Image (cartoon, rainbow, N blue to C red; front, side, top):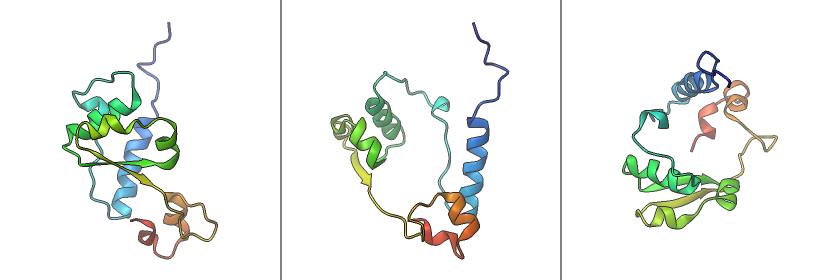
Length: 115
């Protein structure tokens, strides 16, 4: 049996990086790990995401197009009066593909890519 207790975890890099990006882009949202919440994972991704959204009294769940098409079951959300919104936009970046690091380090005004 593997012991992962002393192994580095990706989340230990991801959360501080995300917080730093939020700071640089003037995003005021707070990062909360799902493991900090008293929300059980029922084995169904849509049900779990709906439970997490409801935990924060969320009215909306923003999904990427691919996730929406592949596994989102809208009824899990609508049963809780949560509207599913699908992110369907093309970034106005020259190459057409932009991530936060592209915008941060190559754009004259990185904040213009945040909506």
